[in-house]
Image (cartoon, rainbow, N blue to C red; front, side):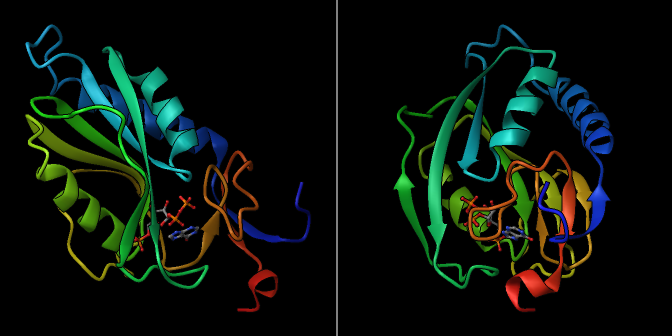
Length: 184
Ligand SMILES: O=P(O)(O)OC[C@H]1O[C@H](OP(=O)(O)OP(=O)(O)O)[C@H](O)[C@@H]1O
Ligand code: HPA
């Protein structure tokens, strides 16, 4: 699939599965089941986090519920600008709930930083983040994130939800894109 467009496989399907299971086991220990605040509420950021979100939820050994938000960061197709607009807001009030944002990638950190500020104003009981990927060398703004699947080099990656111009989300692994594809 997509022959010739993928320069290398950075993280295999098996590595993603194993790390997701570890993260889910660790994180579940921090949330007591049967708490008056209700089940852990996962907030997925569309569209990139969909694959990680569904696999993470199934690996979690505690009950969780799911909500989705869609935001757009203005910028070129390979970088975000930090100006964020809500395309789809949450359907539910999160006041008093334990909330875990599920992200596919922290690149500049601008999207997540904005999202955390926005969600904090809605008074959740707690607000944490789990991200599958992070690019330490690309971060422009520090975001307090405890749970990271993989730190990766500052290269544009696709697959497992991540796209270039809406393509490659359906790859089961994370790969680097051949620079010829995006004129890099
Ligand atoms: O740390 P940042 O530099 O802000 O980049 C990270 C954000 O960029 C991507 O979303 P995108 O806006 O491309 O939308 P998508 O998930 O629908 O592809 C990704 O899913 C993160 O939400
Ligand atoms: O490396 C990336 N790939 C795809 N989408 C992204 N959004 C932020 N960084 C990336």
